[in-house]
Image 1: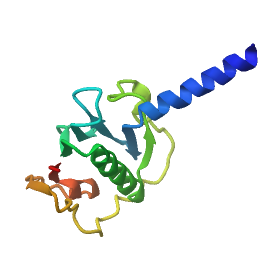
Image 2 (image 1 turned 90 degrees about the vertical axis):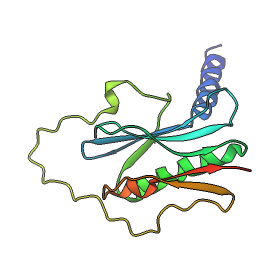
Image 3 (image 1 turned 90 degrees about the horizontal axis):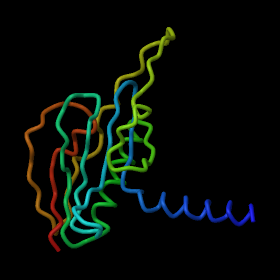
Image 4 (image 1 turned 60 degrees about the vertical axis):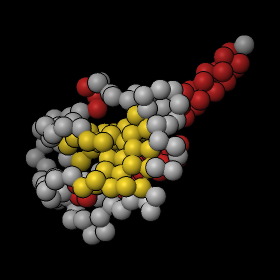
Length: 157
């Protein structure tokens, strides 16, 4: 009976983590950013990719939206997570859309460590939208890697 319960618990955990694979938390030094795929209903579309800079005092931004293609938001969000990791951020999947647990915040360090290197400059082309998408340029002029995502795209097919 114990083995059956353990197996059942393992299956349920693996199913639930797949269900909530629409949210990531990324950290670099004392900064925490979150990337979420949000849907107004339980359906996969319409969807939006929301970018939150939790420790930087800026408003959340909707980077991409889709009305018909269920994979569009997933691909865009995963691409942004991959870019963050490439810039030296540590990103992990989170289990809730908006994690309010204090454990997501970086811990205070009291060691005499040397300051970390600044974020790497952006060397790739700006985020471009698919031919079937429209793009609205936003006026964000901050010079940091993640801000190359300043364009908002909407999938229309």
